[in-house]
Image 1 (cartoon, helix red, strand yellow):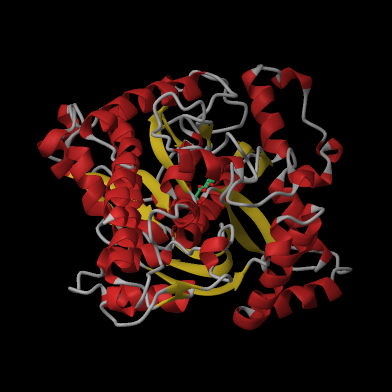
Image 2 (cartoon, protein in one colour):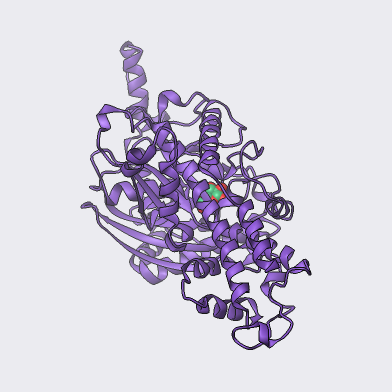
Length: 532
Ligand code: BGC
């Protein structure tokens, strides 16, 4: 009984009402605008220099590397030009030691080695062709880069991007902590290691996973108006959306094509409301934050994403276990247990270890609707070393886990709803009756039961969206954003390279613009080789 009462009290702490959602959206829009106006604000609102989304007709073979939160993925993508693609990929777990290595070289070396293995396995022709070229480099034609594979580098951390393949790391998130890399150009770090292995690969584009998701969604499901937002709800959380250039008031330092009047912005909403103006904060959130590698940062992410939900739950369970008046995972004798056994929790249970509770068990809890919660109880036993948990234990676990999951889904609606309102599309007659397309990816949105439904329910409660508006918001899974999306941006980068005038063309253009024709011909011999 004491356990049930205490559970109720805890569940109430994770309640996030319709009113809270609306207060959250208001503040989200304020901080979003602040990020468009100046650098150094809570939400970084990073300009990506990508000013158009694809329409599905793009073609070519590209490589993509995705350094996410947990895994490294290397893949090649053949874009077929008809909204379809073929993808080959390999995946490796990122060794924990590399996430907190002394220098970033160890991590980037690991990535380059994985690229090497991938090319040798799946694109040996390119590899061999390139090796042969190196051997014949002395011929008068010199070295050409036909065999070079262009690579889109999905680097899912906050980066100050100053060009399509140049960006300086602002801070690590998701448990990574390699101080040496902060402030460095991550594309150059990777290219250096690739060059040391003599691989025929050029890091052509730097892509946040959310931008990739937006691109992939636009490529595979083009509507009349294209996708508005790409969002990740996985190990971490973030979103990238299309913003009007006229609303970006801070200085844009990189080169870009302004013909569309729009640019993709990487919001870095994981850091929305780091100052905790409106985010719900329980004592458990405070404890988790204090014990994280980046206290005070990514405060929205720490309440929403998969990496943290299991840890919040674990912290709550530890507090319950410490309270002797509440008998969680403990009973006096077998007569109190409907499985006629006694419950014990092993000292080595993940519940007693930091990060020891994998969020995946929260999905099991949410899904188990059997009368005796048998599936969840088995899972508690096999994953968390709780021997013979009682029905009351499982009920408490399920109720608290679901409350944490529901709060996360409703908070996610604050971000998605905020972006929809910011776009003005719901009230713009040009988009009347058009769906507002949102591509999402990540373990949480894919595997956590009813995450999207809970998000949708909260969207309906937002002033300015309502039932009718929420109906128009189409949230669809966009898998492979970091593969296909990165490939698409590598393609954009290649087009930009091709479009870039050679030095001679530039000089001729300058000459004609300045009407300096009378100065005579430009001496082509003075044009440096590298620039041609
Ligand atoms: C990073 C973002 C990334 C998100 C999802 C966050 O921790 O800061 O750059 O997009 O995780 O992977």
